[in-house]
Structure formats: C-alpha cells, structure tokens
Image (tube, rainbow, N blue to C red; front, side):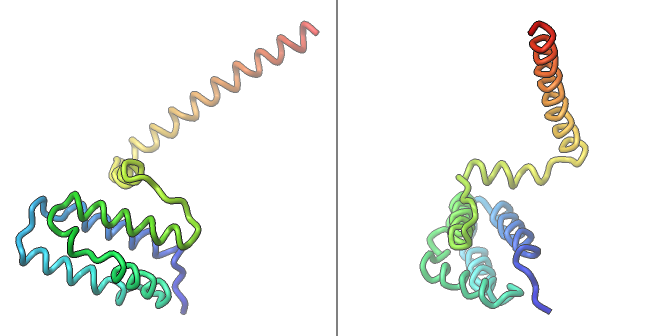
Length: 142
C-alpha cells in the first residue's frame, strides 16, 4: 500500500512543529543531542521514500545543529524547512507569524472555532442582506 503524503504530511508537520514548540527554552547538551538524533532520523520514519530523501537533502543543506541552542531558533528552523518543502511541492509558503498563528489555532477549543466560523458567517449574511436591500431599492426606483 502506498501512503499518500497529502494524508500523512500535515500530521507529520504538526508533530514536528509540536516537538519544536515543546523544546526547552535553553536546553542542555544531552537534550540537544537527543533532539538532534530525532531530527536526523526523522526521514527514516516517513512512509514515503521520496519525501524522506527530500527531507534528508534539506538536513544536509540546512543542518539542525546551529538551531538547537534555543526553542525560538528550533521553531524558526522547523518552519523554514517546512517552507522549503512547500516550495519544492509548489505549495504556498507562510511567514513565521502566519504559520505560528495557524499552528496555535489548532489548539483552540472546538466550540471557539465553531463560534468564530458562525460569527464570520453572520457578518456575511448581514452584508448580503444589505446588498439585497439596495438592489431591491434600485430595481423598485428604476
């Protein structure tokens, strides 16, 4: 069975970003080594050889080592690499603030997400209603 990157890819990225977000603010050498090993072995566990190879090439080109000194730099590196893969795949690249907002939005309570969606829809309905009223007035007075 071939596993589609469109299915597992977003989950893989979410896991990688979560690993970076939970990384210690100022890690010690042992922690740095463990995370280094995790990232270096990450391609081995990708269910698609081609994607694993792409990720390995990125690791060779943009090594993780300089970015393991702090959580902030590790987070920046994960989004940088994510954008590099997106670029290769012809997908949209996101700025760090937008990407972080999108990531953190996943942790909003479900009811908050539903409420925000309904709020937006309510505004759209109001706008359509007003446009409809203007159209009726225009047609009536014509």
